[in-house]
Image (cartoon, rainbow, N blue to C red):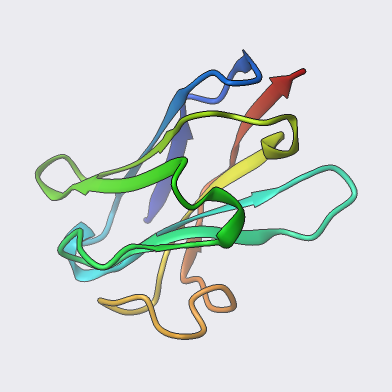
Length: 125
């Protein structure tokens, strides 16, 4: 049984930093690209970042470029999202996603194989 579990969400002041983690079990972790998505209150879930099976060629949505960094440690079956210079508009539930392929396809925002339960990030102004 595949399990995807996020952690690291917290309440932080604007300008602060957080690191989200995601561990995946029940699958061969390095057979899949991995992604982070987020859903703010009253908004649709959207893609934040995606990274291929080797930890290369990351994609970022425009609003987080230069502030967020995605990485992975395949030996630990763990995905990370390092978030710096946080803004109140980053407040959302953040979800880890196992993508269906080795790489982040052009439609990576639309196709996810497995979801985590989410971890809440709240940025106060």
